[in-house]
Length: 57
Image (cartoon, rainbow, N blue to C red):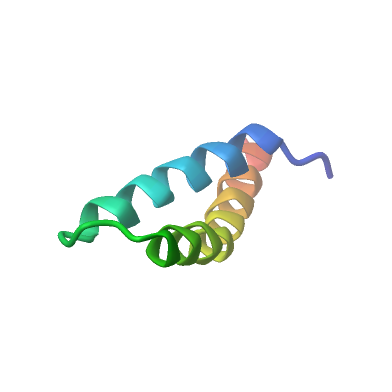
């Protein structure tokens, strides 16, 4: 099964943006790093789901 890397990158960028927008306080370096690391798992899950749905069609 061939997975498209573009799906993972798009979901990662969108999730990072959503996480940054949810923070209403001034961003610190520690917050930025935790957001970048924390967005990996949801991006992997959503990217895999979108790849599987597109593959079936």
